[in-house]
Image 1 (cartoon, rainbow, N blue to C red):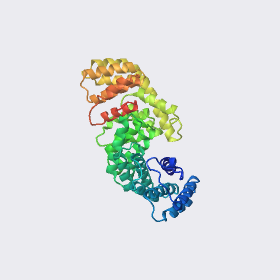
Image 2: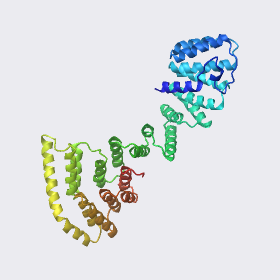
Image 3: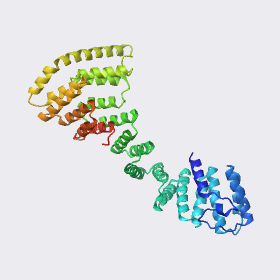
Image 4: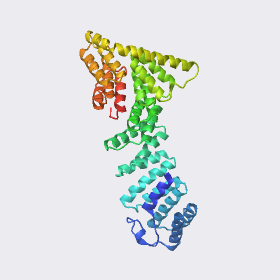
Length: 413
């Protein structure tokens, strides 16, 4: 594939029809070509068109052996030899030929620039990564604008194990693409993530994952990002249910064990309505309710507990709300608001959580902001949710989850 793209470019840039002056590149003034050179060159071009590259190279060796070649004749030989070598799968010879072509001074600046980019690609194909970097860098220094050589720079650094320069180059490329309003290619961000892993840069890897889920969200990327966020040093254990909520929303929970864990966490948090909702979601997905043996019995007992607890909790919510309103701090109001959300009453939940935050005295006020954002999402108020998530602060994990929720909504964090 790479070879065919290069070849198509070469024929566009360097195609010759010897004997017809108007087919010679415009920057190379037509000069007489001696028959002993012109004849094998014409044959070489015919062989290239037939994709018989080895015969073309043989004819070019015949032309090259003629003594006393003019600079013009030498440039024609270099040009065709580079094309034939690229087609024959010999990028190293193609590079040498085109380097000689450029050194000969027969090309106009625009053609020099095009061949500079081609040499960078061919050097990369030849695994001469330092040379690929040199020529790609020269391409942009001379005014090139095509994006392909720039991608080769980062890849060449990576393949030389120069991860620091690879990361720097990739980050610059991605920023430029984002400023231009372009969609950053998935492969580019994946390479950046891999580079950061190679450098043992956990923060850099997480940042690359955030870019991946922002522009190319998949359950696998989300699972990796959530897992790294929740296992980092300093992440509060009390936020595991919140992490599970995000995992549910991003489709990354695929095992009955994980569903069961979340149901148990919701019950422990005094949110049986949410536990029942998680259970129903797992059942609808075909992940819960299909086990056999001891695990089937466990799921049945958990189901019965969730349903029974939800019935009792729902009946007690009005009195819980009154008690929370009479309390000195807003903790009860926030918790009761979360309970209402678990039963699908988002508007009621929003009102109570807002009251709780306003009342103050919360042990974990950033958690309450996070939960208010979730309440807005449950009510379909995405913009208000994002605004609220952006206000979440701290270093114990709540702010990290809020930032991921912003990404999940499709907004930039």
